[in-house]
Length: 215
Image (cartoon, rainbow, N blue to C red; front, side, top):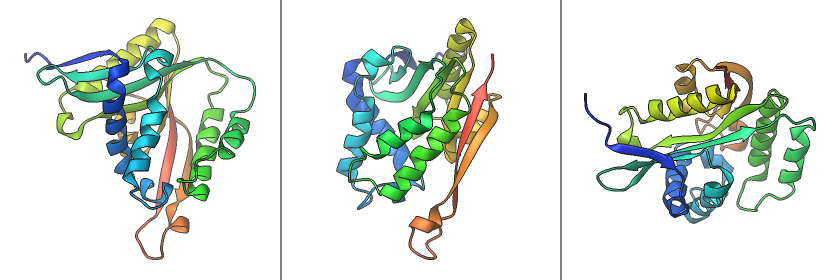
């Protein structure tokens, strides 16, 4: 049996620039990304946006993980995992607060629809003590080597130890990945991207799906 040539470890502060780039390249492939940012691809703004999303993860998200190539030291994967405790107040109101603070590099109608969809999906599980996957990303050239499976094994071990489920809001390109691990659908929201795109440009329905796994 071949020994894996990568290490999965806790996130370190020095990882953040590489994790930001990894997240940026992953999101760039999404159909909705072309409509989410003004002046697309607007690479400098996108890079800074995703880098900012990761600031403090090494402190605030101790259960998140970085994957490193043992031979090169390169960051090749990332898992953002957080424990979410039950809440009583509606997360929809939190979405309303965020909308008022949106940077002007976002297309407002598109990002508002996304925030409302995320809030709608999270409403289904807000009363559940759970783990939540925010990101799971592996560099394309390192896929199909078992890294995703090892990251999910880590997630499931954390969830089993705490006796809580795992929830995720899945974009289309990763939905089937979670279904293979026996995640069950909770709620989904569909967007007709054509309403924000030029006529006859090939944009259609984009689905954000809520999923949950029980130990």
